Amino acid sequence: MPAQPWLPRRVEACRHARELALGLALFAAAFVAVAATWGGLLAASAVCPLYGVMFLLYSLRAGYYGVDEMESACPVGPAQLMLARLLVAGIADLAAGLAATCIVALSGQAQPGMVILSWIAPATLFAGVALAVSLEFGPTAAIGAVSVIGALGLLPRGLHLGSSPLAPVGPGGWIHWKLIYTACGMGLILLSMGKLRRSEPCGQAPGGGDYAD
Image (cartoon, rainbow, N blue to C red):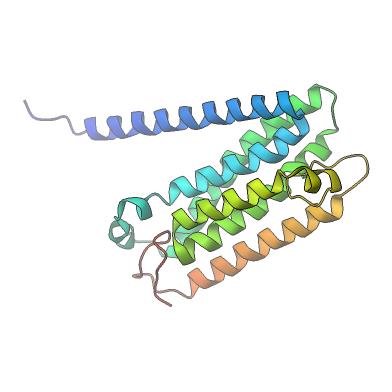
């Protein structure tokens, strides 16, 4: 009996659904763990940005499996492909961040605006770092860079002084740090996209750490 033409698509859709469910479960577990240990506002600041970066790095998985040449055959250029990846990661992070904002705000710990600013600034910074590093050195190096920044950001001294990108926006302010991190993240994203636009459409797909200039 010949295979049904819709069967591979259905299997692929089921696989993506399982991976999405796993990602959501990991996000929920991490959020609950951090919220129970240090507080809900810090959970939103730390977990939401890492969740968005996880989606971005997952979209670069062709670099892990050595099938970048398949993406090179894509009719769109590398800049458009990376823009689509950023949009998917941004939507995932926005959904997670808004859910976390509602949870923290409804608990009465902080105003919604403070919660949003607490996670959107490190999310922008982490996305910029992950994008820039992945284009130059591949997704594995990007994971390492984001992990190092996340670990350093959770050091108590930086959180207490508000200089950490993951420090929640408290009543005392610290908003200037958030603006600095947002500007740095946006700068890295714009520089990376500019470099991609100057690359040849037939160059190696983003994520492998090599493309034509």
